[in-house]
Picture (cartoon, rainbow over the protein chains, first blue to last red):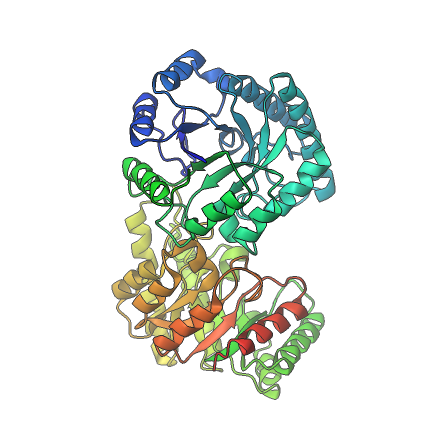
Length: 270
Length: 270
């Protein structure tokens, strides 16, 4: 397994990002600390100077395992389950732009909060169909770029559907695309899974990306999740991908990144 | 330790008769299952036929360890940290009504969601002062009735202040009233505490009530919290009060109550 940490390419409201102020400085720090890669949180790739971003990451010899896309929902309200067809179309277009951007790094594109929340007045089955339709369009487009999408179950407070790994797998099956995988996030799993370890085993054929955050969303080692056992379980299913820290910048951005590396090195993730 | 489960009196949304029948049936069920008490969730005691409620509970030989008060925030927006003085006054009056109602059972009155959330535009220190002022007024009033209040830390998604037991203790100290204790809720603790057990030990002089819900808010035993160890820890601090199941009605209300009793009996809470 390799280790990465989330860095936002632009200032953002979303708090579970270790770094968000000075992009270049953050990337340098990530490399110095010994991470193998950096997961980018991008609101709109069209607002970025893509070549600058690519260059900064290349110079620092980092990989980009995944692109986070949730800010487009959090800050612009774009979502796959929105009753408004125009909003759904914009959400699909945004993810397609992310796919094009991700192809610079061969990164996975994360489908997390961009699925939105199903509004109370909306028929659940219909909203699920809209979401599946959007996922079909995006996976189809992603195939042209050889890009994989990864669907992230999030806890009940952040979305009201696809909360557990199993629910994620059900959606992946309904979409039926070979380039749609599953993202296992330990913070969300601590709230939603009956067994964190059992659910990883059960999802072994689907997991393509992993987020590490402790039970309180601080760096691994700062809460009560048993990461030793999580890592053993990931080894058991022969997971070869990245574990990426999507954590709060607490007690401060530098410390949380350093604590992450220290914990992961101690636990021998390689 | 004794065991109870939360039953909502669901005041205004149901016709009085239907409500009364449902309530009576629920209370009967709770007694039959072997609970020692029932924790009542009350929106507004003035909407209740108090004598009927008292009678139903008496007939079924149950105690009432605590009254939950959060519906007044959730459904009416009454909160201790509201910038509007009139809203705060209404929140205090509502809690005072709960205190009078609670005195029928010698029940504790829970200060959970009624503290509200601190709005983004509001100065945090000022909102905390408003909350402390409300708590001072309510504890003062409660003394006349010999009633104890109990402050419940809740997870970050439900309120943006008083999330950990330690933060609760800080507030209790700032209020400085002898009849304000702390409520430890395992579901919230699983998200907020660095160590569930360590935080109980640290809060031993403050805990006056305990909520049991598993990590997914189902009945104890349905998630991954180690209730054996939680109970051992509560015994270690010589906790003599109630453990009260505040859980989702899943897979259905009867089953979740039955599962709770089964788990608690297996774990020998007495």
